[in-house]
Image 1: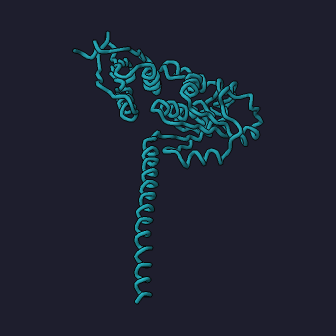
Image 2: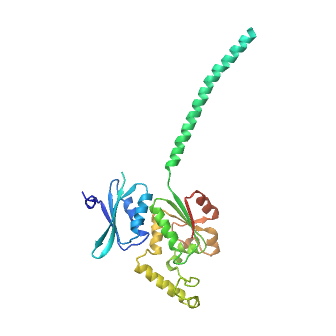
Image 3: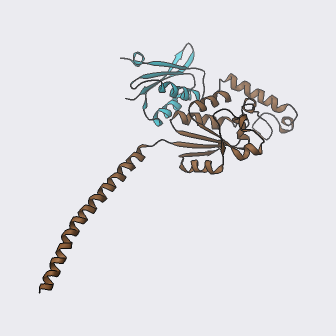
Length: 85
Length: 199
């Protein structure tokens, strides 16, 4: 079972910079249910630290994984945020 | 003797009654303490953080920090209040917030000498350059950040004394802005807040 197959919803915040990746992640999480997994795709390198910090400081969510990928020559930062049960 | 025995029984009787009364008093005290403890537990459960920012500047660059921090803190689920005063009011001013400006005067980090930066029309040029950078970098606009703050329940307050001082009208501000507040309101919130910032 890979994380990709468990994803409930994908949020594309490519191009957006601080603070929007975090703000949009929060707004997306508010629309999900317990146990859901949100995939956040960003191009802002600061999102690696920011989404980690946000998830640690926010009750009810946990950061399952983060990865850096190359997508057609562009570096994207992918975050998996789980809504806790 | 009889007096003594009476004394003794008198002493015993209140003693026994007293013991029962003490136990009753203790029970009541325990109940009282248990109630206090459960109330304290409820208080401890309410660990929502809060932040108060005092925004005093209305230039294009200085409008960003309060809005970025406020929207991010709201994303953390914090209770956020931004108290706008003096030129910080322009951030909430429906017309003026769309036209915030940046000046190179007095900022030695900008690549324009003060003598040139102070010429007529230079602020407009500096602002245009900054706006282009903001667009090119896909940095959120002031309007977008304001919308986000309102959407996320950030309380945007406009200081009444400076509204009057700057000759603004309460209707000049965005819907949802709290007017009729002053330093005491800000301080009261700050005293209870986890984070207090002056920008």
